[in-house]
Amino acid sequence: YRQWFQTKAPGKNPDATGIGWNDHTASIYKLPENLHPTYWTGEMACELISNYDPTNKPLFLKVSFARPHSPYDPPQRYLDMYEDALIPDPAIGDWCGKYAKKLNPEKTAQDAPYGNFGNEYARNSRRHYYANITFIDKQIGRIIQTLKEKDMYNDALIVFISDHGDMMGDHYHWRKTYPYEGSTHVPYIVKWPSVDHVTPGKTDAPVELRDILPTFLDAADVTIPTDMDGRSLLPLAKGMETTWRKYLDLEHATCYSDDNYWCALTDGKIKYIWRIHTGTEELFDLTQDPQELHNAVNDKKYRKQLTEMRNEMIRHLSERGEEFVKDGRLVVKEKTMLYGPNYPGKENKR
Image (cartoon, rainbow, N blue to C red; front, side):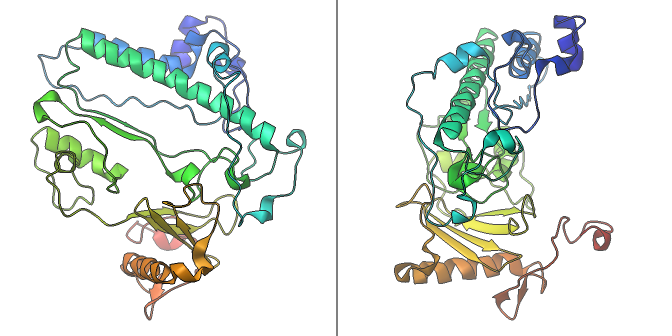
């Protein structure tokens, strides 16, 4: 990108953009729109497709946009689209009083992971975030149009996903790494090749990023290795799959605060969170409470579901040994496991 930037803006340093990495402060991109990293990503994808000979061999292309990850820095014309838009206030749960104290954003680190900076600050951040998403949508449209111009679109398998979301002030949390929906819920859109004859629709089955590779292998008529944990989405999309996974497992090592070391399970309808350092639990009914406003872990009517989810977590973590599950109970750990148990020299990397 630096080389491309310098050819498009000779004599200028890329740092002249004023971008501050990971800041959640909202700002406007200071240079022409076609010098923005988002535009560059779309431009490079379109150039590659335009110059590709599809008769030679199939094309695999991974297009990775850095935005809408912070910093929230859309071009002005995209921000203008949201000037009069109704922007929702952040969701504030009845469980997050720890960070409720009002803070002055001008006196707080711009990359602070927690903080109540007020609703207007959050709404302004969201305007910029949404504008960045719209800017990305424009680039995806350019890529799709280029595929159509090359007569490659109908045969293409396209998967649109994200690796994580952004809390955007929900529950006084910012950025990522958290078990809550703002951080963990991501888009997952699949456009199938016309030859697969998939009827457009939605599924509420818990699909995940590990399903991408087996899906591509299946669509390409390549045998899926039996030791893959992910599964092809093609049978699911065709309505032929009857035995799908029950839950997704989520996990993050310690980050931003000591208690932010957790494992979670969800099927998109219920979510159970186990805090490994503190031994605390959280339970959210995502069907009735999609914004996770109430932690139902102590509610009598959820006792059965809590027990079921806890047992599922015990089963899930038991393969890691007695460091995580001992005598049929979840273990509170003082140390964070940053590496898998089979990683070389793991005893020195915790």
